Image 1: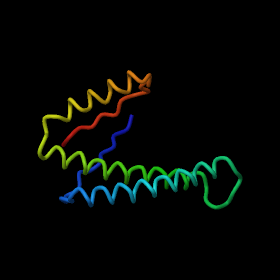
Image 2: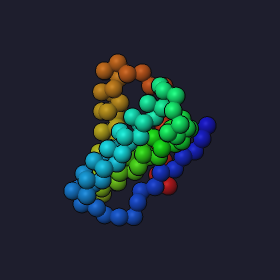
Image 3: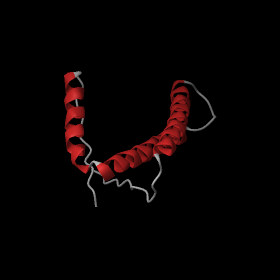
Image 4: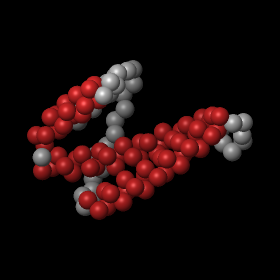
Length: 109
């Protein structure tokens, strides 16, 4: 078991900034995952598999950070809908046949 905390950043970006940041971070994540995939399938000394994996994880966290900012911005005006939207999302995944390996819990300090 591990405990990971991800911050809600102290900023108030408008929706355009959120969209641009999401595009930027998603592109970076796509790039590092493609590199990781290549390294895992081929012998290379571009970088170690561990370094490529760490890069992919770092970019995934960057994308998550942008998503946290978007969720926080929505919750400022609509805090009551989070649980409902999460429940709908889980129901949708179940209906589509996805099995859950485990659940990650998010706790607001």
